[in-house]
Image 1 (cartoon, rainbow, N blue to C red):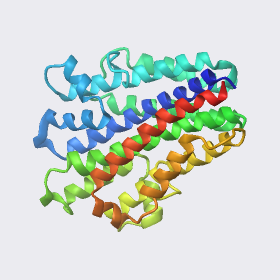
Image 2 (cartoon, rainbow, N blue to C red):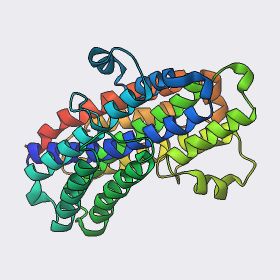
Image 3 (cartoon, rainbow, N blue to C red):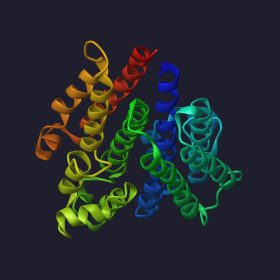
Length: 313
């Protein structure tokens, strides 16, 4: 497989995951903002910061409002991480690597592009926003389902998984950071009903509420929720689960190469250094600092994976 094909697959699935995850982040912000009515539109500054697009937003907009922030994250072509930009980039990459995809995966990708573009052709009203976000999640999930159901488990599939789980780990970390560091109103709110509602919102944002209840029942609190989203290897959006999948797929790719892929060594280091402790150690370090370090590690791994594509030239 050519390196450019590997790169196209990697970025196709990163963009698909990013489109879904941006929708999830908007939904998390919308729900959490409803618990802090006094904060007003300024609440969305936190969401933009967590999405990593605040600087670009400020260059194009004078002030932060809810409508401007949601529009920027959903459909602005000036924002390369907007849902619309991501779904267009995913389809572009899919066209470049179409011979590496099954017909079902291509059809699902094309359908997702057409439907999401139609939904985002005009500004989305607050009333329609929940339905639009749900459709984004459904269409990207359909592509993922077709991928799992029809793709051969070879190096093509491995690069698909690398793009998916790098992006997913990044998103879970960002959503956790939204709650714990940016959106918590004050130390006095910890343990209150407001705090509990916001933690519940984080679970909903990563579709983890049902799984969490199965694991912990009705009595789990912030420590248990954080453990579930950081260290639980059975939860498909946890950091530990995503990093484990990165490691296993890099191992598969590594089999035909002399010497160790640098990206594999970096993933092994991330797992040993950050995801082999209990949750008490994470809180002792400071969850925000922990998340910042995880995001930095994931960014470096992503760059190294792209460098490692040269082994497939």
